[in-house]
View: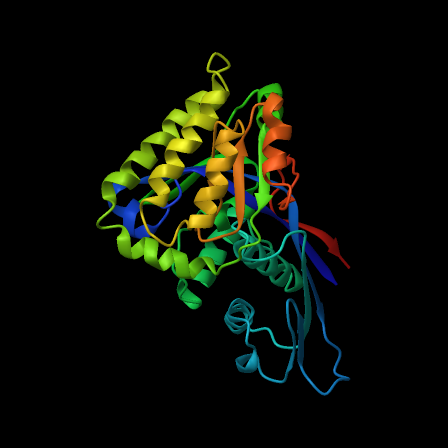
Length: 325
């Protein structure tokens, strides 16, 4: 039995510039972190005693005799790619899918990590990220950027830079007390709205040729955000104000990114004392993240009393194998 444990992520700045259609020509960068909500993938060989060869348990249960019969595209394509057949796979997560936290990519990274371990193959974090990108973007044909797979594989609070030559991952050297204060001043709420990110990502990709100026401005904000984070002389509240600026730009890229309801929620949070925030992920639903000074926490929480607050702590480990029996 193999069990992998892979964190989900929150992306602060640069989202959209991680699309190959943009960064191959203009460069790209994001600042993101993983946190202590995880996807667990449990994989084992299925004995030759059942009336089926493969059993899968995720939001649905599948029992099939051919890999081609598998409905889940990532599982089906990964098993065909790696030549797997007689297995039992169980997937559990600390957060629902379609919440803007990168769960689908965390699942892909964790699944590949478990599959390779079962085959006795050792992969680096970069190899796992690259293979998850290939699985989702090429084999499954899903639109989107490539930051989520990298964040899930590497873990931690990073700046990821993209170019025509590939990508690099650089952990940000944020003083520990400052990082903890940032963590404490970030409040996250699940809107209750779910959506398939690749559907939103497709509209973002289509808009890129028209929205180059907006994406270029969002890319510049990555440098500004890094300076705020690593320089103790910069007021940490500026991070929140910059989040507001990047959200206003992001929501202008496509009409699918925000909704009237999300805009209303955002305005209420700002009126209650948040300095800035954003909708995490591709847009359309999921989780709202806000930077809120401590004295305004309860005011903002009252605004979202009908929503579930997702409490979290930053983590640094990335994908791991926690059981190899």
